[in-house]
Image (cartoon, rainbow, N blue to C red; front, side, top):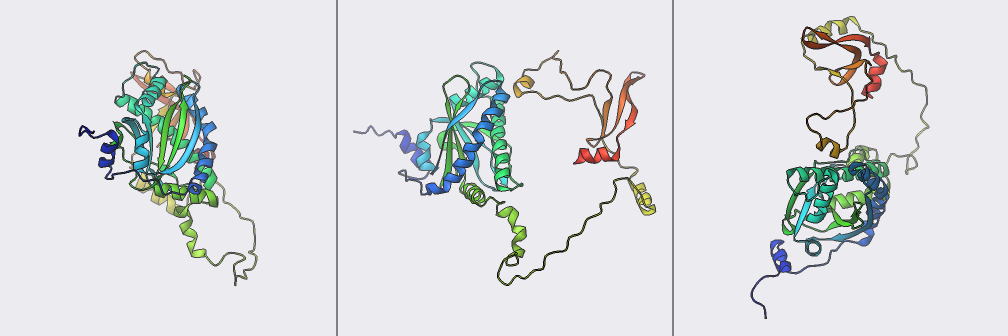
Length: 341
């Protein structure tokens, strides 16, 4: 006999507005294209995450299936870490990653090289950066496969919450699950959720091998006028070579007069000693006394930039008690064009 207490499954059902779990209505054929695409990203994902953590990270055991809130929630532990990273363009819609608290702590621990880590704001930031790297790799591969260059995602928003509080899509969605081995030999499960509009858009674009409707809309006015369509008797277009103007700066008298209007405009000028790239774990471990080695040799000219564009090179000097830079070389217009490109 029941003692009157609600089970966890009943609590989840009440919070989600339902009584019993209903199977997802999605067609398994609709997720096969997404599974093939995600499976092709796993080697790059494993390599990138290994570089970030400095260890041997492997993503395996990919599974993709249609689901809904009632079917999916019972698979999760009571407390989870959710990282919302919606697609904002290309295939806009809901997109998030979910993992157990243990998986989140393991990832943050490997990234920070710290044992017994707590899921504080710093750990959430690190987990968000890892998820951002995963999503970025997916977007790069998706852009290559579909030709849609407008795909972008929002900044990651990570939070540790009860599973019933996770902002899942209200209707049917697509779930991809991975086994992530951080080098310990004990893999952790991570789930990736694609909202219905995202899943449908990606599937259609992958099967067509062309950009999604957001990018293709501009060609709608050309329908019915393509070569080979009924009633189309277009003559072959004439072809002639194009003469491009030179890049040498030549000002007309009018341009010389107009540029005088800009002479009082302030622009940001910076001097760059050098650059370097660091892993997140290296940046987080920096403290007072840390020495950062740059890519410039001692005595090599420094770069002078205006609005982040290199315009000259120079040598560092001391004027009274202030640093300065003496210009030794002006960057040519062609080189500046290459930097902008």
